[in-house]
Length: 281
Image (spheres, one colour):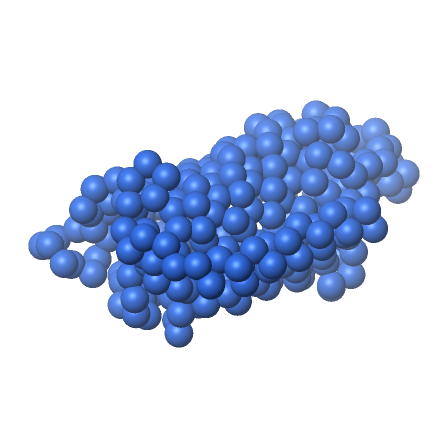
């Protein structure tokens, strides 16, 4: 874990140094961000696995939240909120983001239908705090797009799994038309041993209660996957209303994929989808 923290610290330090340099070098106005505050808020419904590693699904509320206030971007990624501490600058081709993230992890904190997994007992809610940083390039294929390498590092401060999650990703976004916006990402997760064993381990007592084999999960690569967000304005040109759709897939890896919670009761293939209506203001 200490090694991972040092690596992430070095990456984020480099990002800050590059951000300071980039702010002193204005680039082409073709890659500038639109000025002014703006917020996109949407509500709908989604479908998600009933617990991490499950093959059963449940319907949950789904939504989107993103925008810019006082020159600072923010974005809700699932149950994790990110705020960019680096203010936006017009006419900047190299785009840097760095700021805090806060999120909740609600795995197996409510009812679980599978009797064997339910017999293991409920888990506590994890409150994860950390940092996210990204280095992006605007105007890669056209003047509206952005390609970025991002890293999010978060730690549970509530004493649930008391461990870390490091999530590198490659992200791409662009205006697909005058009415449509698309953002896609290739994702991965590396987790600490505490996270892996808390969510996917089976104690001796749990094995006796559930019938699953006792298992101790180690940290490492936890998943690889991809996700996509699409929004499209509806109504007359200039309308503030839009439709949104979200889809994601990840495949569990390593010790997590080999857990009896996944192998015997679920699947390593995890899907999520949501859709609804949004309003911009």
